[in-house]
Length: 354
Image 1 (tube, rainbow, N blue to C red):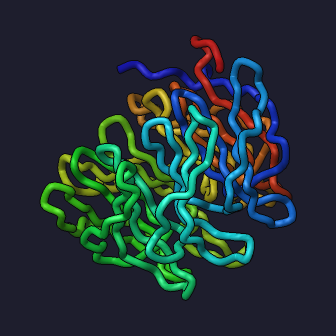
Image 2: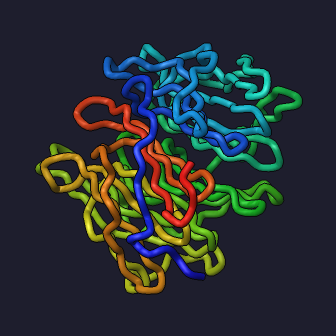
């Protein structure tokens, strides 16, 4: 398969957000991008729900969420957006679950979680949301696995995850839910576990080779988990240890590729936007050993087996939210000293942009 050259990727600045935002959630419904919640410049959780209109290049304000929240888990069930948990205005986790019907333009309160949780990982199988893990109000991690049935409006308990954690990554592949990484208190985990929905059982997979937080996470077109960069050791900026390490898990072989079979990124970075786009791994922005926030962008060429430099983002930032829609990477909000209102799209020149 041919992949675009580095020169074919271009950035375009789109309509800025109504206000600077960070830790918001992005979802796609019917090819359109919705943005929910987040944190404003004063550190307050936002109730905002906004839709980006590509035809008009502007943000449309929709009815706000009944419960303002930051870092909610969001799942799309048909034409409806399910919003689960997150952090409330009092900085405590939420148990409230709300659903927005994109056709009716209305919010409905749904059955709450069994307890208030933040940092829940969520995925969808057969029209049902699977919510895994999270951190409770006592700051302890949970191993709970809950399944939401839209028709019955009930949460059912499934066998719990062996390793309690929050801020993990959950991904559905066939009948299996892969749950990678996450945290317990402030400790980053290398745990990698798999839930089989047919046997209703958990399996422990080989640990992630490199412990990291704030790295890039996505699945490529071959069904491989890709973990890139991140922070190996926190602390002040001077003592932080960033990495350019790349780990790839092959689900067919059930193992992590050897280090000689992967290629490290050019720049050590963390807290960046990342995606698999047009056959290439892409990383953009973030924090590194440089004194300021990064605007640099790299993409891996699978045939040349090397990382190449792409055109930089117009607005340097970290902690941005991103989503791929119709082979385009949208990078929204983030932080550069203060929450950013920037909204940029990375696309391949041969196609029309949004």
